[in-house]
Image (cartoon, rainbow, N blue to C red; front, side):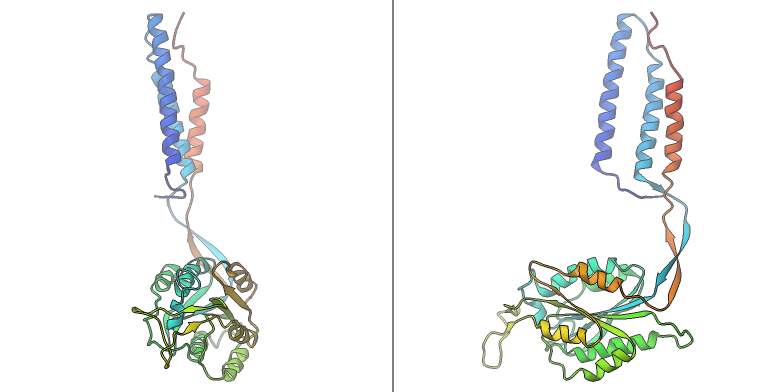
Length: 323
């Protein structure tokens, strides 16, 4: 059996309060009965009735779920590849605790908003590889997202070309030629915008031909921050510390060339809600019907039994003290 709500201190305190008040009531009845030299044993019958339906009401509030049922839902097909920059500049701390840690936090919120879509995860710096293929399994995806760090790939500057090309290749491989309608295909590019890739014009043409939009999410600040290492900070060939800044123009350019949009995460603001709305507004041509397991909340069973005992409590009257 599963429960729709967890057992909290509120239920415990309510139960304790019920017992204290009712035991106080019984104590007064016993004192009164002793005064009239009678035995109020029937008071325990009422106590049993009321305790029983009180517990049933608590059980109904918690929402007991047992058995299983299937439900068919229609979803508008959407495939989303999330491309996450894991180059060294993502360790900069102008967005606390660091750019990459902030991305991981936002990904947890983001992924849970798209439980009816397939999502995949690609990590990149100068190279790119699939961390998690397209899947409906949010638990696995969240696990992969939590494991992101800047040592996954060789330390080098970010290059968007291999990451975009890899996502494009995976989308093509997932398309089924016998089905004319296409699922909506979206690339979510997350980076600070420091890009060392050559011209992306050929990639733009391929993405537009396949009707794949790139939504870019920039993280960082215009003031920038130093890039920390285990000891010290990243320096250039002259030994000068490198200041990493958000290059919003580059990310906006990529989104604009693929009919996408640009959003931003800063130290004190986040456009994640707007990004979620933008992705939700994109509809695929093909609808899918999926069968999912849903919890069968049977709260009405204990509530109905409790109602019966409440009515019996009202209708059955015992004379505790006979004068």
